[in-house]
Length: 98
Image (cartoon, rainbow, N blue to C red; front, side):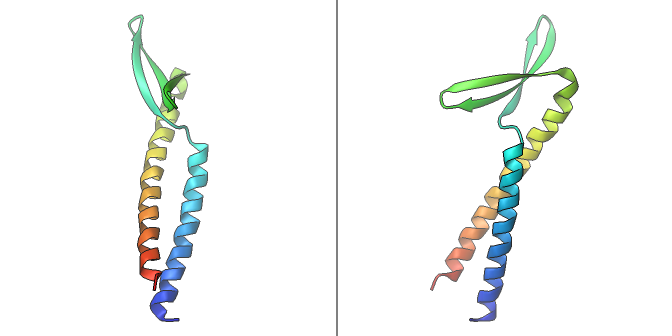
C-alpha cells in the first residue's frame, strides 16, 4: 500500500466519524423553520415543518424564541457541514478505486 492510500483511508475514517457525530447532533435539533404571524396585533411565532403533504406547526412561547432560533440556525450549519462531508467522502471513494 502506498503512503497516499494510507492517508486517504485515514481521511475517510476521520470523515466517517465526523459525519456520525454531525448526524447524532442533527437528531437532537428541531426540524423546520420559524414563521411569524400577527394575531390580534401581536407577533406570534411557530416552528413549522413538513411531514408528507402536511405542514405541522408548533407554537413557540416568547421566552423560548431565542433558543429555538439558535437551535434552528445550528441545524442549518450542521446540514451544510454534512453535505460537505458527504461530498468529500465521494471524492475519497473515487480516489481509492483502482
